Length: 185
Image 1 (spheres, rainbow, N blue to C red):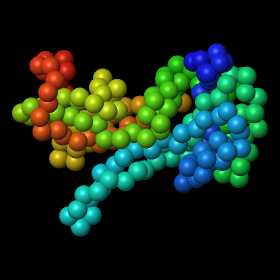
Image 2: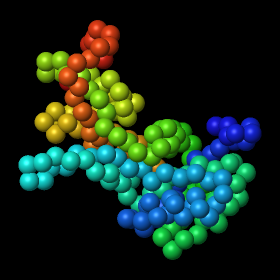
Image 3: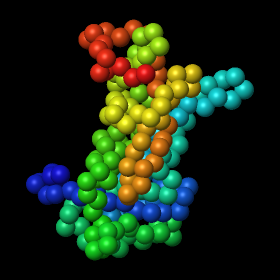
Image 4: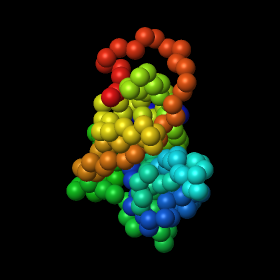
């Protein structure tokens, strides 16, 4: 990916102390000029004493994702008491490739915050019309309408992680006619 000025960006990942993701992300951006970070968070719906509210929670505990210019040698010197290591390949390369890189690009597209998607319900079926779940339509494993959440399969670091992402049901949809390929059961 090209950065401003024609430079190339690469994506990487830092393994850190769980619970310190936001502090590590802020530290890296403050200390290492030109490196951008996201601690992937998601908006989750919680119920307590009959009331429902939303809150942000870390989507991948212990991981902070970053992008830097490909010539950025400073990545190897990330230091902080909460950083365990920069994830690297067998050859020592910090750059992510393939599905891992696509996942991190997706996270950066949402500034690291995966909010509630919007769905339209027609009878017993729903259709994702907007938000992060739309990007994962083909990887939805299960939908629980009562909880307004969908379980999706995400690949990262040669592992498959199943996460629950929330959605809001919109009353009326002013889009095109639904067809069988667009409807999730």
